Length: 133
Image 1 (cartoon, rainbow, N blue to C red):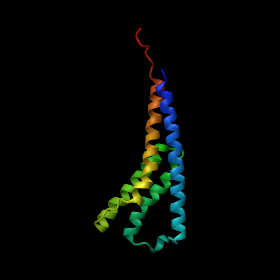
Image 2: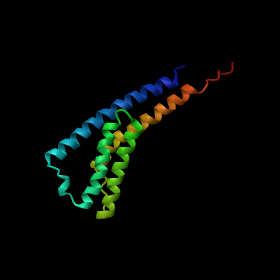
Image 3: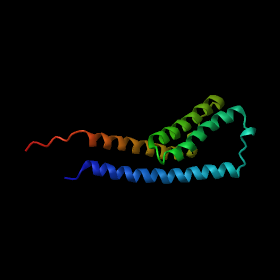
Image 4: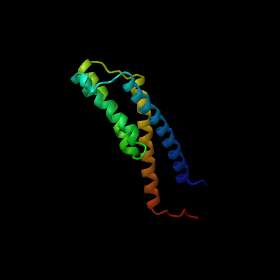
């Protein structure tokens, strides 16, 4: 019988690299978009600055997630939720389009990797009882 821990380890490794690839692409895209549009934080209104904090947290999560999957996933998802919450509070609308759904994917994958690694570590510590004959 195949070792379930080995299967989970492989799944986590694949999910980790998918999350890393997506996060690198999205972080680079957002950085180039900000630079290309000439984003100047001094010209933002208070509402825009508060909502931008969510995107900044998400952008940091894309980078931090490479080493700390749990923290990176929380930063990504938390930042996007922050942005959506304040967009709803300030503007009365909540846009859940591609700008929120696609960046959330690496966050979800990072959290799944973190959970999978915790599960693997926990199963490695627990004693294995032999199956009865």
